[in-house]
Length: 566
Image 1 (cartoon, rainbow, N blue to C red):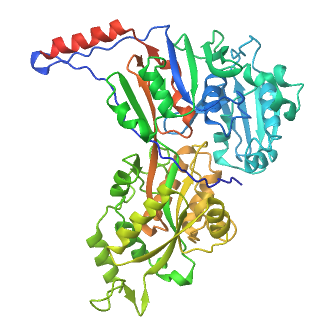
Image 2 (spheres, rainbow, N blue to C red):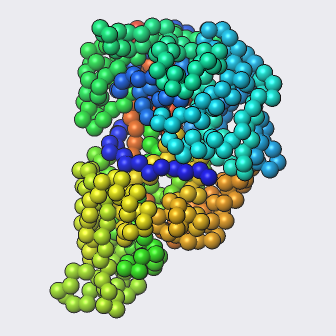
Image 3 (spheres, rainbow, N blue to C red):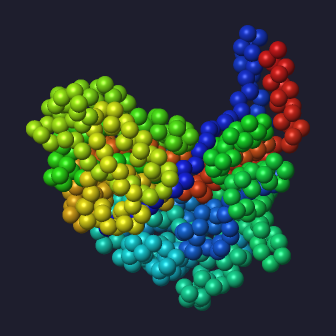
């Protein structure tokens, strides 16, 4: 059974997609577009925020900086498109058995390691067998998941995975970078952890490590070269130079000094300065994090939560846009449901709740929650007030969000008391024990693009699982349980669409917003596109299309633009 962990998200990242579109004056004739053409060559220099530890996909789970570089050096069996759908990587195709328990993958026979050795099924089997031993370096629930799966090679280029039972999101677990058995095969996992090969990696990805950049005895950067043995289209870039910086401020300063062309991510303290840089393009994407207010639907102290119209009134009473603008400095997008926007399973036509305090008041009145007299500040019905406590993670940003919600609800005469708790106590204590009334939480859906809402909303998870709201809806559970084992993509989309419609109709929790991720790259670097991401390394999902134009070419483009517009 798939488990997804709850994680506290402290920093919300920000930004704005900036493209350069050069159009002629339509009054002079047909529109003309001046675009540079991709050409081979050029070196892209990135200021990467973070530090190097181990360039090994099995040891980089908790280090985003290592994950980013591993994305360039290693390949997985599959990767994902902008909608989160699996597409070929090392595997040129796959087949799933009728009962959904057996997966066969055909490995590209032209795939080679950076040292020229062929990539084989044995490499895949070796990688996942090592993953099973990754305690301390990989999440325990992930290790437990893989220990339930049998992996074997059918022939040199075919690998098979056998599951105990059908599980449709399984493909999402196969983007792990594959390791070469001929390099690592004689090591135990503990020996792998300590091996110097972790800073001299051999992969099968589009770039290989050519050189470490040293500052004394410390690694301050890397030089990656275009992989001549790459089995897919050759990337345009000749090389990528990585320079490590402790934070976004230092990385941005390096850009201003001309030391790097790009910054791996921008925090709010440099955003304003980055936005006014004339030769810097900013790219933004929705992060896989869903902020919401969880309501305990099975707590008799707050039995008014069991009234769907009260829940909808509370939703309409939150000015989410103001919270995003004032607290998050505009660095989030409003969420409309439990599935992330941009994902293949997201239903665009789901009912959306706009801020409307007057409508929220009217709805509460219609449900019998009124002010008993002119002196009352809290609505009540049959002598019971709408008065409850909302827990929130004990940090400054969540405090500001919680206080903003508290003020919004006070405006519709709903009294909310706030209680800050450390993350572990909030999730592993109060929510796990169902000992709460309402809670402001961040649901982390990173790494795996398949939404699989089952752990959070299925009725089997009410008592001991992660269905903390205790939403007990049999129809929804049938949708989620079927979607977990159904391998037909169209049918899965239909099931999740139905789930989202019911969710919006019953609103067991109150979706707030999704934070955004931003990185910045010089306008000289073209061909960049980014969709919704599930980890920071996804910004490299189309790295083979990135290319660099000379300053002379850029100047010519702008000159042509000005000439046509005169």
